[in-house]
Image 1 (tube, rainbow, N blue to C red):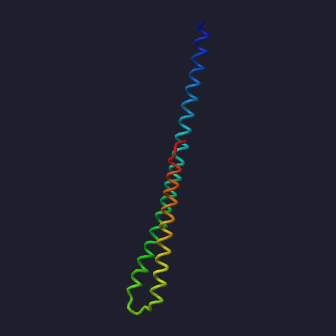
Image 2: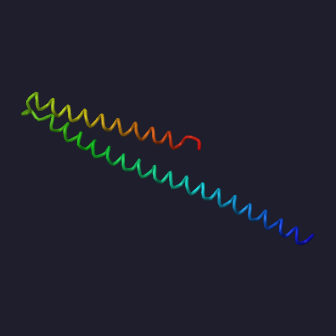
Image 3: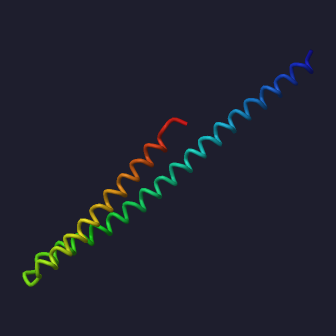
Length: 104
């Protein structure tokens, strides 16, 4: 009877360890996914910051009184393209976050 009890405790202990290890592995996987998403968001924010700085330069250039209307239109076109790219990045990141945060 004592041998059966010892075997049963070993089996249940191994099952507990396996369950704990499995839960730990899932938590590590989630953490790695979150870290990857954080890195992607950081990269996107750096890219957006660069574009905003370029937009600021364009805005300053546009105030130059010596520019022709055609030059101002070209600056506006570049400005609008940067704005559209920022919107695209924001939408992409929002979609990724929604899909990453969906139930697994």
